[in-house]
Image (cartoon, rainbow, N blue to C red; front, side, top):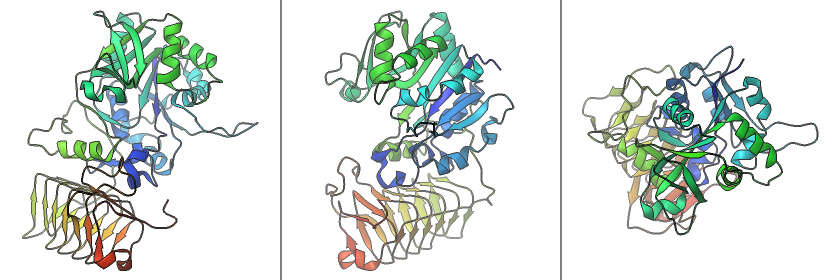
Length: 422
């Protein structure tokens, strides 16, 4: 039963900065690049790196994530020994405990890890887009006789205060770690990817088990420093994106359709695997036009689409023009619409003659930190009636009616969230 290295994938996050996109679904289950979900990237990295035992820790809105992962067949993780296991918080005899922090979630699953008695444990986050060979990181960990290895990458210094920041010497040994410092002294940022030697991780988790909201960046890593353990920074130079905001999520999708994409989904040797629905091929009607787009299986285009990511099963009506937008799975868009810089979530429907993305910039009245970037964001299963106009930095969730739009317009910065939808 022994495994050299197992992975623990933290996929419980609510992803509140993605607004209405994560109202009914955990952030790692949000669709990406048309056919994938965000969690497909770390799961594919695991199997491509030879890590065949993965515990996926779920919490917030886990249903779609659990259904998507199933028994792990798409990632070749349906194993008799190991494979993928979904680990939700569970009822203990005395009380039911939610995971209260990243390390607390791992602590609550010590028994799962003990079962494999690993030499090393790889801790991953379920909400980043990247390709990484964890085997190379493990080789680095062993070569340095490290207790903890933290994957890190340089970030612009003005963004450094959003991350855990590492200070390392020329041997890559970490001398200091600061979680989200106000005045960062380095631009080497933790990617939230760790390899721990199992005895070190286990000792830290047990020692800090009573710590409220126990977290890797705030508690476990500082504790390892106090114990004079050997911490090393493994510098990563590839593409990595935290798609935690609507802006970064939109940007990461748009980068896929560049003439030479920064992030290549088409490489044979490092495939991204996902659960595929059995769908017919795309259909582009006579007179329709599609330029620089990703188009999912089963999509039907009767209008024009430019510079956009269109998911599987989407229907785009005649006379409709879509630009710079993300249209997720099974969305139906009527005839003669104009859609600019919008994110429309799964199963939404847009009536005929709707214009989205009009007007001047205005700050969001709902949440200016979330609804920014000039995007119009429409939550899943939402309904937009025919003939309305929708501005920038807007949010819509639920079945909306014509009377919800004053004079048929949702002005920039405004929102419609139907009762019971939040």
